[in-house]
Image 1 (cartoon, rainbow, N blue to C red):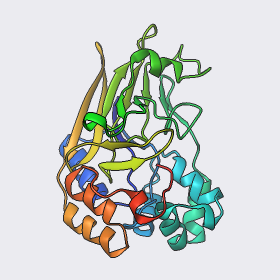
Image 2: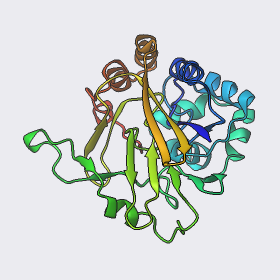
Image 3: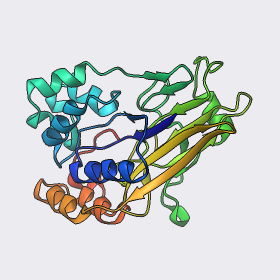
Length: 269
C-alpha cells in the first residue's frame, strides 16, 4: 500500500499542483489523503476548494474548517476571515460533509491534530521560553508525550497514524505498541506563529511544499518526506496583495519574519 499524505494546503493552489506533479514523478500512490486545514489563508481558497472537490480525495476537516463553519465572523482571525468572505454555499457544503477523523484502512488512522482534538500539537511541545537565547518556544515531543496525547484512543489495531496541523514534517514511533505517527508537513505554508499556550514559532526553514510518501513493506512502513519547489514568489505576492505580509515572509523563506500579532489581530493556528 502506497499512501501520499498531504496536509495544511491553506489555499495555496500552486503548491498543491506542484505536489500532485511530484506524486506522479514518485510513481503515484494507491491513495492520496488530505489531512485538513485546506482553504484558510489569503491565497486561493475558492480555486483550491474547486480543484479538490472535483478530485474527491479522502479528506478530513482541520481546525480551520471547523472555525470557518462555526465561528461568528467577528470572532474569526485574519486567516479564516478572508476565507469565510470568499466561500460560496457549495464550498461550505463540501466542508460540512468532511469527517473529523478517518480510517484509511483497518490499520491506518488519520486525524488533523490528535485523535480527539484538532488544535493539539501531537509531535511538538510548546515551551514557555520563547525569545531567550533564540528559543522559538517549541521542541519535538518525546515519544511518551505523544503517547499521552492519544487520550483514550485504542491503538491495538493500528500500525500507522497520519496527522497534520503543526506544518512540521515529522516521523515518530510510539512506545509500547510501536505505532508510527507521520506528519507530512504543510503543502502551503512553511512557517507561522501562535501565542497559545505560550508564544511560539513553527518554521521549516525552506519554502518548498511538503508531502509524505508512506509505503507498507514486509519490514514495516517506509516514509519519504518530500520537499517540492514551486513558484512561491507568486504566492507571496498574492499574500501581500491581500494584506498579509507575515504570510509573504513565510512563503518566501520557510521562516517567520513579521508576526500576525503585529498586524493587530491574532487567530488560531
